[in-house]
Amino acid sequence: MIIVVTATSREMQSAFGAVGAPAVEQGGTAEFSLGGHDLLLAVSGVGLVNTALAAGRLLALPFVTGVVNLGIGGAYDVEEFPIGTSAYAWQETWPEYGLLDEEGRVDPKAIGFPQGEVRGKPVWNRVQLNPVNDAAAMGLSLPADCARGSFVTVSSVTGTPERSGWLKTACNGDVENMEGFALAFGTMRAGLPFLQVRSVSNRVGSRQPEDWDLKGAFRTLGDLAPRLFLGK
View 1 (cartoon, rainbow, N blue to C red):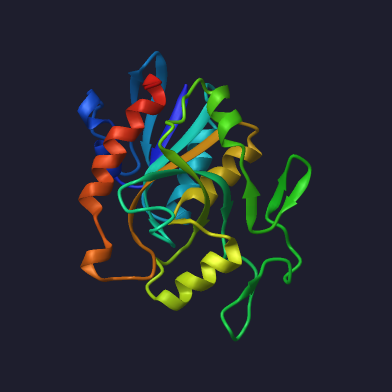
View 2: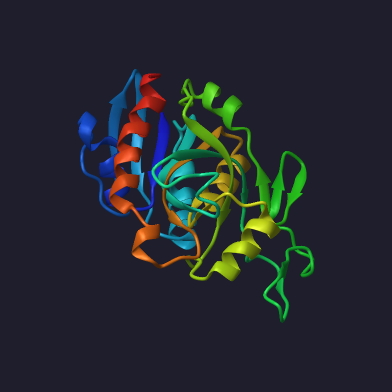
């Protein structure tokens, strides 16, 4: 069974409501079948803490064959990743782990404690993903119109252009989210395939209405998510 995790009920409903999936509330799960795949739909709640708690609970289940994280996210450069398009993650970075200096930079190695190991290598604030191979291992198809991106997981939504520019440069960032690192790290530690796919809802660093389209991002998610499992 593949676990499919979203942060919010609205994301889950947008992703699978049109193909008959049951509603799932925060902290809840529901079994669902699509395209010959047995799925366990789970809504974690927003942010790293909620997601880590959910991951610990879900990854302890005995029948898990992989994890898919779906949702919406912001783009650091909307010319490269336009609002309303979608992207899958080839790496995840948590830029807030480590020693914070007076200029707002964080050195993940300065405190001397890696978060753990994946495949025998220490993890500080970044995990390298294998989205194409992991999707294939779960029998899933990445849509041709879904871009490949470097994802950044933050605890606070980036609200200024200055911070946005720093994160894009420091993390080689393309898409910002609030849950992906926790699921990626936990799933890889469990030795299972992992895939994260998001639709782009906004320009990171801007709070102006013209730089946001939540409704459009939810529509994109509703088009994208079933295709992962139906192979269209």
